[in-house]
Image (cartoon, rainbow, N blue to C red; front, side):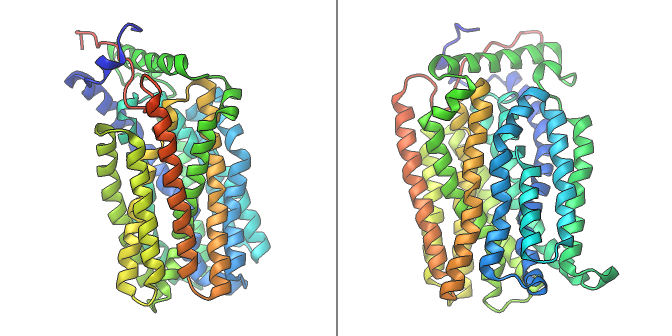
Length: 454
């Protein structure tokens, strides 16, 4: 197995091996995609809820940005411990626990009574959901060879645009339930969109398989081949990069990836939470806002999958990541300068979401190309946890600037600067990885031959 070179791995998989990988993809990713749709919906539905909730509870723009962003502070604190627990306990049990916890907290947020209690519940929601996203990225390293991990990751991250495509219209429609059962519409929104996560947590316990060796839905030869491919990749990475937990905390590449993710999430979450109010500023009604807000994410969903496939087949991956970030930055600049035109602004918002989605679908295979073992569990959690602090900074930054200038223009221009900085940082990292011999770009690894019996 170890004698198979990286060069031979670059020749790709045989048709029989492709069928195995396709079977794994369809078995694992659709369920996790559904979970991520619910996760992201519960994370950003307060953007729609804020259209009426802020007035009912007396929450100012800056207070909303601060309180909504506390989700990511809770996420930051619990991220690394959660990922280490997943590695120790197993993905099936731990992801089920995460789903059940965040579903109950998301639904309970419907009963907040002001800015303080809203902030507390957002913080608790972050604690409850912490570890899900990096846990899935770690879980993918147990199942998907590096050559297809980009496609698997992009398919999983389709949950972001799908949540916004279906979430914005559904959430805005739920606001019309105002007064039913003595509850506000935004309360029904939070309850009805929170409980499905708890139900999925129960299903998760009976659905996921921790590792290929335990997969009864694969034949013995299929299990052997996949396990050997992944073991060979881990061995190849370990020969070039340290794999202990403490190494993740002192690896400068991990810190650069965290900084890139931080800047990108400022744009992703900041734009996601405030987009409904940006669109509403052009005079659209609440339900119409929900449908218009779905348009950029429809564009992003289509583009991110195409971009991920090009990234898996194309050249050095960091170019694809940087290009997406620059498209997002340029689009936000246009949106910032065209606040008087609804059409131009909506087209620019589509470009911004496309750029950010392309970033997300191509970025995550990069850290997994130089992290393995406990370093992967800790490193991926560090990148997500530090990056998610951008989810606190983004909404708060936009809220403060909006409140002080009474316009979204400078807020969007500021967010564009963070995306441009992320593009520069990822290219510096990409250049470093290119200089390193072997499979540092995460595109290839040692592949064991598949037995002829399959």
